[in-house]
Image (cartoon, rainbow, N blue to C red; front, side, top):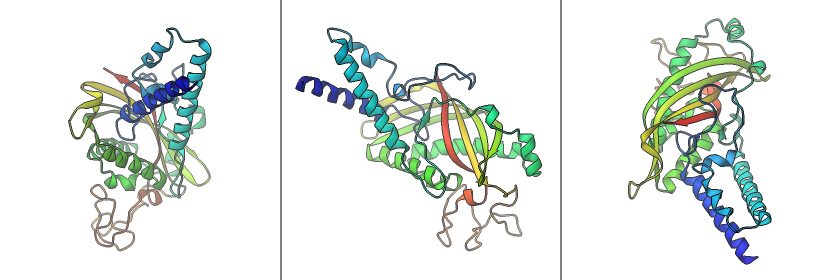
Amino acid sequence: MKKLLSLIAALLLIVCAFTIAARADFGDFGGDADFGDFGGGDYDGGYDYGGDYSSGSSSFIFLGGGTGSTVITIIIVVIVIALLIIKNKNGAGGGRGGNVRGVNIGNRETAQSALRPMGAYRELDPDFNEADLREKISNLFVQMQNCWTARDIEPLRPYFTDALFTQFERQAAQKKADGLTNRIERVSVQMVEFRGFRQDGVNDHLIVKLQARMIDYTVKDDTGKVVSGSPDREKFMTYEWDLSRTTGIKTGGGLKKDELGRTVCPSCGAPLDINASARCEYCGSVINASAHDWAICNITAISQQTM
């Protein structure tokens, strides 16, 4: 029995090691194992949350030789339970800015039937401009990857709800504590598509599908050794972003502008460059766009393909 418990403990350590080392890209959505269907969101087969922490199913191959089926079943059940516990812990949290659902990987896209068409949203907000917001989202995605590599996501604070930003901030801090740097290079946004919108009684939600490609790998700070990913292979990622803002706010009615058209701090009126900093350099106020404009309240990785 002690040998069995030791084996289970060793397996759990291996699983935890994969959990730490195999995550990559902003928010730890990418990994060493591909998932989903890059061609579209209505794929079949689903995805096992735990499977992306290893490079395929090879970690279970050695269980077949000379081990009873009961023991194998017990070990697999224990590992699944441990992964569910890890997932639940990662999903815990909350705050005034929105809900944290953990790292969402391989989920299906939001059903189109749950969304209203964008044409109906333009009736609610006649000045809403898809092209302008699409460009902002593309630029923000690139900025997110650069900040993730730098392990400093403070400049991104205005663009997330409080709870989601806190989650990503913890993840970035953990990488620094572990002596790991996730290098994300040659980032290119391939598509930004507005799939529709919904309202929850408090906020408007825009559901956005984003496809991007990048070089994505993680190295140890002290040795420079690559511990996951590859500097020679591209990842093609599909994400779903949920952008929210308070119902009733319309385009142009967000953060205040001065007579020169510059965005100004809502606390002291000083000019702001929220692309450079999320904090007013004059009064120290943290500027959060969720109270004034669109902010990301949830990100889901729909698929990953490595080539």
